[in-house]
Image (cartoon, helix red, strand yellow):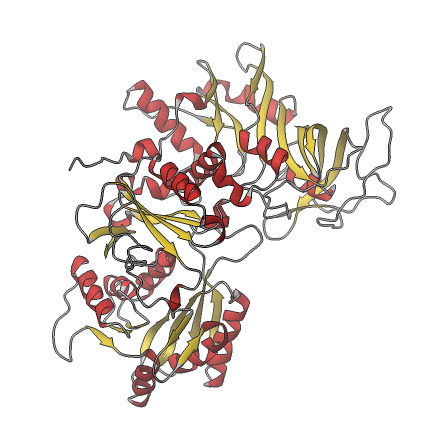
Length: 611
């Protein structure tokens, strides 16, 4: 068999020549795709446009010297459009004067909902200041001041503002945005904006305050959309060396034009190949740092398995796609939109076109917990449905340097839950010298992380002996010696968790860290467990084996259990046993598992620490 050869640099390139909008000896302007940050969130894993442009220029010029780039502006991660950089330090001052003196003109496009039909051309004139949680807010102004200032000679009533935020005015700065309607359809409009000032979130907060938030804006309550529908469409400036008038334009992106014409596409995105490709391209951009980790990160931080598409969070409802090394695993939640076979085949074709070696398929029933056999070939084919299979049935992936063994063609499960990556990192960081209990351990990924973090002892408890054998294999892959006999540092218990906890409490066993990650539903001969109603009972049992100042990592991947309710369950369970808490806090979510706009992620996690 001729094997494929995935090229990560083709799937996740630095940039391409098509991204360069203007270039001379002094300046370079590029199109920043949506999904690319202007500044890396993690300096140890840079994925920002500046790093990528430097790498692109270095490769193009074939030199070892890192090209100079002077940074004068930024765009939000999901805002697309023009970014201008200097290529020589000598022109920095002249360009900076234009930005600071407002002589450089910035043009934007914004797709909004709620813009009044009569308001064809107006100016938004507000005072802005910093609010809470990274928001900007419009400060309350003198009574009688217009929400929108119309140009001379304009007619028609003004639309009242929706309040985004008000304040006393301390530290506020004036923001001027000139607005003209480019196109509209029903309640949606594509607006041309000229920002006369350059305040943080200026267009976003002003449009929201005027009653027309930008679609896809999670902060200012925009309507559901594939992304933040804001585009830096152009710059007008004097060339900092020659003084000539320079206009740089970046055409309206197809996703914004499409949004105004059709609204949030929902499942119909799968019936339009161009729209589907755009949605996949945005998901790929958002995972750039993870995608290039296998070659760019040092071995101790290398990650080769992560989520590429997370259903509605990536504007692709009913579709989840995970990367496992050189292969994809596509999970389709059967029923409804996937009843049409042509739609399934179209999605699989477009996934394969991304450039991975093969695509495995999992057809997930809405209630997968009721399945007797999760290895049915009609639900989870053993061979990929596109491309070539993995080199062996069991392959090794890396998660921040930690090796785990997975099986892509062995039923609905692969052997690891990728959304637990941040929590496994936390356990690894906390485990030095600790006794760690991993409940519902499955293939023992948390236990391996704890062992590599220096845990003195780990105990993995799960009802499945087969899963625990897989867990032993994961310890072996990580190079952790298991030992034998009752004094072994790492032990595996094939037993019902509730029964084991009751016995361990009687024996007065104590652990510094207890990890609780139960299935949403489970049943044994003696007990039925439903996370949405019974989680506090589980916390009661787990808390009885916690050592003083011990930590409980409580997780639940159930859509019906809200984060606040999980916190309440943990607090109630601890209180029932008269434990006092030093801390109870939410744990961060995996960034490659974005939730839909305005909703919580499926996986929720809480850390409780005893006094």
